[in-house]
Amino acid sequence: MHKAFPLPVIEFSDSYRVPTTTDPDNTTTRKDDKQSGRTVTITTEDMQRKKNDVKARNTLLLSLPDEHQLRFSKYKTAKELWAAILKTFGGNEATKKRKKNLLKQQYGNFKAEGSETLEQMFNRLQVIVSQLQFIDVEVEKDDLNQKFLTSLAPEWLMHTIVWRNKNDLDTMSLDDLYNHLKVYEAEVQKKSNSNSHNMAFIASSKHNSGDEDGNTACVSTSSTTFPTASASVATISQDTASAYIASQSNGS
Image (tube, rainbow, N blue to C red; front, side, top):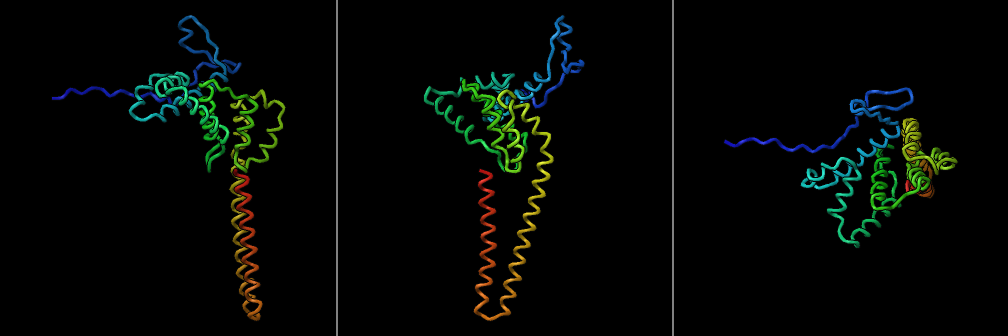
């Protein structure tokens, strides 16, 4: 009879536990440090940094092939995990240089993708920036904030213009910028959905109007039938093409 052995468990740390004791100054004190005779004050910024590290670690761990996840799960922070990955899979100097250039290219070409949420976009950018920092490529706060703002979807245009002209954008952290924008996400999404419905209604109205023009022209002589119908179709096609080009330009 075979003896059963417990399977190893991979820790993804997909949640962050906020310490239970909170003081009026928006800080917390860990109980285990009290028991050991030490008092360690943890600020809200520290907790946010820890949450970001948990997200980055999980993203890195999940990007590894299944056969390597157990081996690398012992590293508790994103920095430790990334250092171990580089040491194992980093390759020679030429390979490292290619990876460095690839990360820079990913950062330069970074844009909002499809219908992803603000948080999903923020997390993607955080991972790229973290990987750049791990290979000693620092990104200035102002450049990072400008990159995040200019990468937003077209419906964020007004907020992008306002925030790009803020005086403290060069000292504000990306976390703070994200938290400020997060407040407006529901409003922006609502307006975006409303605009989409309006565009669909206008397109439908133009299409129906074109059909009526074509039918009216058929009552007249044959010499006027084709020019009138052709003009209506040409107008609809031109409007559709213009709208498409504008959407592509805004999304690029």
